Length: 459
Image (cartoon, rainbow, N blue to C red; front, side, top):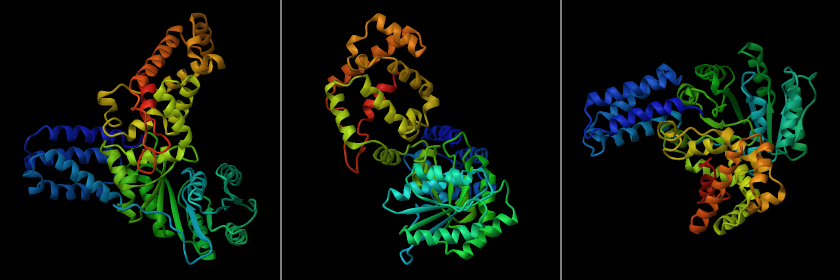
């Protein structure tokens, strides 16, 4: 997860200052020196870090902190507020042009940033809001780019307009807009060509498309893994073409993440979405306040709730909750719960959104080995249908067969069976524990996180 190293370092700084009853100016400056180093190592731009630290210091050495009963918490509060301000304060959403029959989005970016996939992700996300998008394949240079867009468009249920690779991208864009109007699509998303590096021909092609077709949103896609270079790219595109917002991809990877902290400060343009995985559903609205909470180890419960509502079927969750409450669930149900957990990014992904748990994982909790979840799944899939439905059938000879089928030791099968039975007993003793709240304010379709954690944290 991006920012993991930064989060750990900031947590250490905050633990140190929280342990002091009173903070001197020297204490604050020493802490901010550590914060500065952590940000620079996370690849946040030097000028951005300098201004950020200055803003914190101006507030942190005043009476607001020095005279507080909990000065350490006050410093954390100030850092959180300044992080939010750095990333844009308010959330910016893609809006439709109410004065036009078709809103046009132009996707731009360097080759390899994930632009074509992101175009499909964005189309799918906006379609879920009741919008009728059309994707236009204007990348005629990269091999298989048109086909890639068609495949991804089909997966998200969005039509793709293409004219092959022999046509001029400007003409394709014009024809795509005409097609959108004819077929009553109210949104056109134009996927354009990228290059390995910025060059004049790429910039001119984007300018020509914008001159030929009225573009409402020019969205730049940048790769978080390129670090500070992503900020330089954003700055150049904004200067040469003009951008309205940015989508940062690969923020789920092992990246330093400095781009997400620098782009708004350097370009003045907001981050609209963050790519958090390879699946076409892995595109999250970018909330500066929620990202600040993640960075500081405070979790992101709201995003977890929204993801659960989008990924998990409400009626299915209700039935599962009832089974868990009565301790009537079997291995088929347990397998379904594991699949739901995977949809939410796996156990480690969920823990990263939980307050203190994700950030404190390395400090106080054991590392989570997602491969262990795969072994548990293999064990369950090695059972017969009857065994999965009726766990009491699992005698020693059956367990031996299951172990061989899953490629694990018999002791591991025994451990899984034992923990599964313990979970059933625990749920029976706590009938009210699993009644998840439903509706917009609760966990929505998930509603059963306790059962999922109870079943998986033990493995």
